Amino acid sequence: MSIDTRPSLARRLGQYVYPYRWGAVLTVVAYLCLAGTEWLLPKLISYAFDDEGFTKDAYPLWMVPVVLIGLYAVRGASSFAGQYLFHWTQTRSVLDFRTALVSSLLRLDAQAYTRMQPGTAVTKVVNDPQQILQLTGDVGIALLRDGLAAVGFIVYLFYLNWQLTLMALVVTPVMALVMRKVNQRMRQMSTRSYDSQLVLVNKVDDITRAWRVVRQFGAADFERQRFIDAALEVRRYNLKAAAASALAQPVSQLVASVGLSLIICLALWQARSEGTGVQHFVTYVAALLLLLSKLRHLSDLSSQLTRASVIAKSCLELLDAPPEVDTGTQELPGPARGDIVMEAVSLTYPGASRPALDGLTLAFGAGRTTALVGASGAGKSSIIHLLLGFGRPDAGHIRLDGADIELLTRASLRRQFAVVSQDIVLFDDAIAANIAYAQPRDEAKLEQVLRAAHLWDFVQTLPEGVETVVGANGSKLSGGQRQRLAIARALYKDAPIWIFDEATSALDTESERAVQQALSQWSGRKTLIVIAHRLSTIRDADAIHVLGAGKLVETGTHAELIAQDGAYAAMVRAQAGEA
Ligand SMILES: Nc1ncnc2c1ncn2[C@@H]1O[C@H](COP(=O)(O)OP(=O)(O)OP(=O)(O)O)[C@@H](O)[C@H]1O
Image 1 (tube, rainbow, N blue to C red):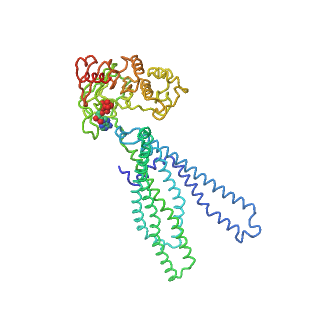
Image 2 (cartoon, helix red, strand yellow):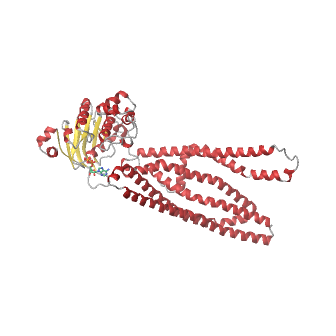
């Protein structure tokens, strides 16, 4: 698919304006009305003061204010309507464009998120649509204003002397060639300027996110310098783009002057040989000069259009980014029993040199608690990645209640899981909104999960209780509170399978025990998968799978594995030694 060409860009952007085309049409009408009445004022004034105007009783005096005020009222109304309708159309189109971009962002394939930085996404979805439609809108208005006048002058020039005007068109191909070259340079520099601006946005994003690390390392000067380097890069390309744009006018004027001199010579020659009047010649040249001044304004627009097309191209890349593939067709009729079997599952991440999972076969029994343990990088989180359908196994099958999960729609599959992951993600919203995330609010259930997550007493101490806003990613909470909030959110979802990936690592022993006790009330009713480095937390699990380099090393209960005296027993001994 080509999104490089301007017509294709324009067509694709146009689809967001199309539903509001009447707003655009009425904007044009309003501006036409404004342009159409512009000449009326000097005309009326000259009429008022010509010989007839001075003649007594030529027209009653009250007509002067009526006509003048009437004219200004019409022009004022047209100007207001033009601007209002323009912005009405623009803001609606921007809203649709942004919605399309955010929908695309929400559908992206999981791998795309590992490549895209948050700052880039913010720029593309929030800033760019406004800028594109602002730039193209400004160009549209200028075209209406100067373009219409230019067309008028061209028609007038043809009327005055069509042979001469036709001659003037000789320079058009040269002009087009020059503008093409200038535009190519402008496009190149605008693209680099845009890309370097994204780098700059991500630098600021990093500085804000990592402010603690920056302070700890006393790295303010270091970060400032990194920012300045990136900002200098933006400046360099902006300046180059501006230089290319600044060249457009003088170069095009120079080419135009060739045409102009050609025409003046021809006109003079005609006047001398055919005896055409001086007045005719002067009128023709004056109209030609006015046309040139309008064309000069129009040549300025090309830099705006180029910038708009560079930004639009980048936005359309997001719009065209491959969405998550969902080949599943079956919906689970209700909650699953929660019986999971992995059969010879292998997974190698794109670009990785070795598989994260290597022919892994294991099971998570329905209603049972199963623990996954193993060294860092052994593949524990990769199992969760596949269970949730964020990736597909390169080989093997994963079955949920006997059905291959590939046959299930992603939405149906994910409804079966509630996950507390290693990286806690909270929204800058109230505690209650974080817990009942994207679900109907139920006060009794809210209290139940807050109690289960050992968070109820803490929430009671807050002046605003469950309505307390937690800050960006829960920045107003402690590590343990953030983790308990994430646990409460998972419990609230009430899915048949719960996954706790290092979910209690930040909790003190008392809180951890309280959470575990609370979880036991769901025992037998939920399939619980627990990943923990602290082995004391999974002693009571019904089964423990020990992983090593993407393979199952051993499996059994705590007592069985200790008796077996293998990898698990060694890990337990090592941790006992550390304690
Ligand atoms: N998105 C990714 N792209 C490439 N490689 C990845 C990606 N995610 C994980 N890996 C690699 O896959 C392997 C298994 O990682 P995984 O996160 O499953 O380990 P883990 O057992 O959960 O580790 P930890 O206990 O440290 O969380 C690691 O070698 C890791 O580097």
